[in-house]
Image (cartoon, rainbow, N blue to C red; front, side, top):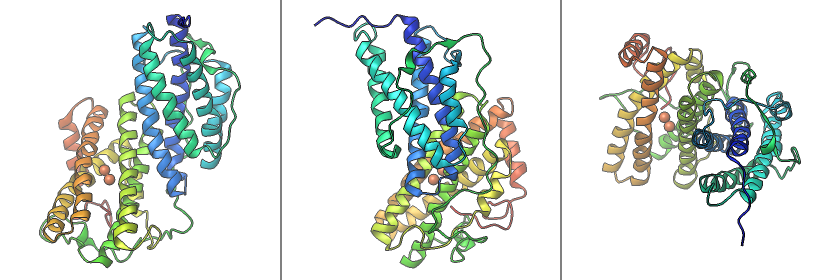
Length: 388
Ligand SMILES: [Fe+2]
Ligand SMILES: [Fe+2]
């Protein structure tokens, strides 16, 4: 069998540049809309896919570099591709966003990647073959999950659209600031959240109370699930609202977004399987989320990653140990993984907080100390209950 002729290096790079633009816009807008999506399963899918897309874009940047093309920003999209990106950016609800993103943009990516796989030279261009096989498969899985059976988008191959090398970089639309995240209709949102959850659950040290009875665990894990969702939503908005941060920042935020929705999923399953309760059984509140979201990126990193998550590590380890001693291994295991994932989350604060302060980790630590002076013993900026 003769091999297909394949693409020359420049045409190949132009194809990857088009994928770059679609994925860059998808990561940016999925992060913007994810907190506003009320449905828990759809919110989870957005958090999962945004991480996949961010990693895909990292690999595409790498391939562009290998093909001797600028990997940071490989020239601007054509007017034709911009029409698709503009449609995706112009929507006014998470549902409408998913319709364009999963009904047009992702199917267009899949179509172009599959075409490229058919026509590339499998030996000379084997790196693209392996990369695109993986990426097209992931994008197909995303469309199958959230595409609602919609098939649309440009019929032609977006991979062959030209790239404009000498025009201004495309501006990304930033959504208005969040008033609060969205929850399913059946979840009651109140000012104070679940009154069952007391402060001694969230303090560090001798007075910390580990929930060991079934009823208190029901409330505790329900509150924790909401706290994980809020953490994911905060990371999503950090990425969306600060598009000029280095690309690795967006990858770190996407990873943490996915980790936090995974933690929420873990609590959701634990409630159903072990605790006899479910998401929506108790009220939730957003006062803690709002108190952190009100800060700029540096403040959020100092107070959330550098303080709240840093202090939660001690509590997770303490909870794990106490529950192990009581023979509640399944519940104890959850805290083991929460603790492990918290390490990189705390590091995200150090890495990007220092970046915002001219690269100085010392300046970040000083800023954390300064902002912590206004906190109460549960680590919250005001009289609002902490939640992890
Ligand atoms: Fe978490
Ligand atoms: Fe975390």
